[in-house]
Length: 332
Ligand code: GLV
Figure 1 (tube, rainbow, N blue to C red):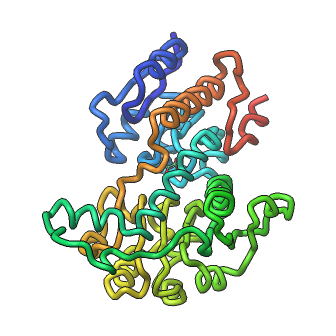
Figure 2: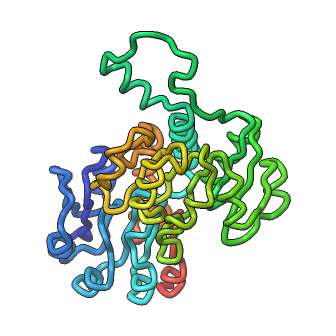
Figure 3: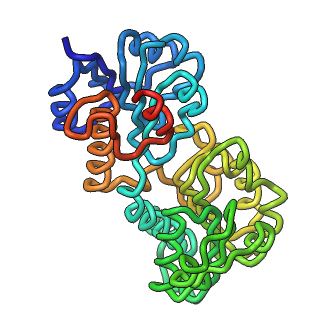
């Protein structure tokens, strides 16, 4: 009998077929986001789960399913996992780093540019039939080239954005991170490490790319927004919760900052009413990694992880991107 796994959301059919070569697979063809009780019930008897950021794997879920051995996210972010609780119970966690870095950085840059140059706001104006004449100041925004790009969270994606800014757009790059990068990594990005306060004060375009965790909950709130330039933009492609959306909506409405680009939201897919009510924000539904090729690469990597984590396939026992590899060491 093949081991049982759960694929918690709809995904490419050929990826499911590949999983079926090794496992008895329960799928979610309707692509429903299951409430926690249903997720716990569907995990019964499953040794592995192919998950996305929508499925929270916490103590309650783990304790209801002690047979679980691996949870493999099709996402680089893994704040939906209680990794410590998984590790304590011998459950391997994996994510999908690297494969989405460049596509996500492209999107972050696009969102920043759309906010700075007021692309969506002006498109809505045109579509509404309100464009009757050219005017000298119509939708005048802020320059991106030559401006100061501030990056909060200088991991792989932050660095890919910094590279675009420095090398493609002649931007000055400043960043804040838990720790300073090696000067050899900083040099080609021409990136300068600064305090968070300096980052907020100096950035013309602030890019939030820091992974979410309790330590960065509302890292950007009313006090931080108050330090920013009135001409600055803020782009969040990290996670909802890093930015206090209510405070951001207030700052945008009162034009205390110029504009924002948001791909992630607190409590998404709900979006704060204050953000929906202002025109100087570009809003997208958590799609920063969504290119055909990248989503495919993410699904393939998540499947490779699950197959290997459950002791199958050519890399049995050696999943490519484990988050808690100590679990594997304990298994040997
Ligand atoms: C998307 O948000 C991801 O974490 O991959």
